[in-house]
Amino acid sequence: MNAAAGPEIWFYHLEQSSLGQVLPELLDRTLQRGWRAIVRVADPSELEDIDDALWTWREDSFLAHGRSDAPHADRQPILLTSSHENPNGAHALFIVDGSELGETETYARCFIIFEGRDETALHGARERWRTLKGQGANLAYWKQSDEGRWEKAA
Image 1 (cartoon, rainbow, N blue to C red):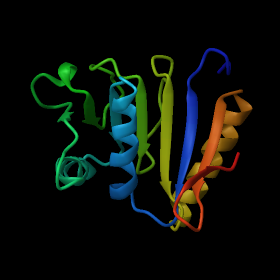
Image 2 (cartoon, helix red, strand yellow):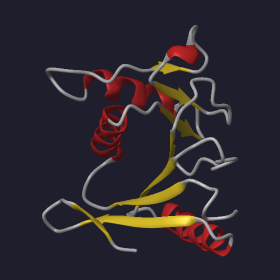
Image 3 (tube, helix red, strand yellow):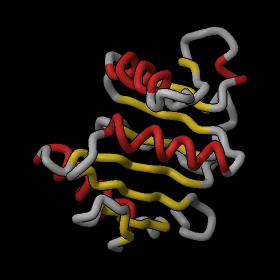
Image 4 (spheres, rainbow, N blue to C red):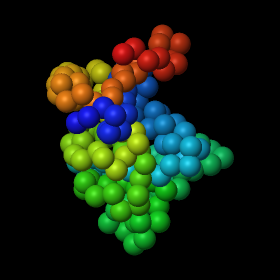
């Protein structure tokens, strides 16, 4: 992978917040940029929890989204899936629960979100970082400060 040709790949290390707290905020920022997004999971049973969280993430709003197995997936601003397809022409790819990254050429930015309190997830993220770094990927590592703000650490 050539860093100039590939997307930015940002690792988000969850230590203080849960996926249900972080993912909607990142997706909201993505939509504010005018981008579409795909959230890819390894375990399709995770889709239900993420689906519910996006409908109820704030009392006064929700994040419009759909699932790849539902009609009109190509029209969705946020698409939840376990496949490697990009039917909605997403600019951002969100990888959760250790899902495979797959081909990234069509994305501007990829987010790899992992649970820092889970040794398996932590080990997998470290291995993924080493592999991508060895391929020359454009990487960034984000972690939460003690105050809960996200800080770029690498």
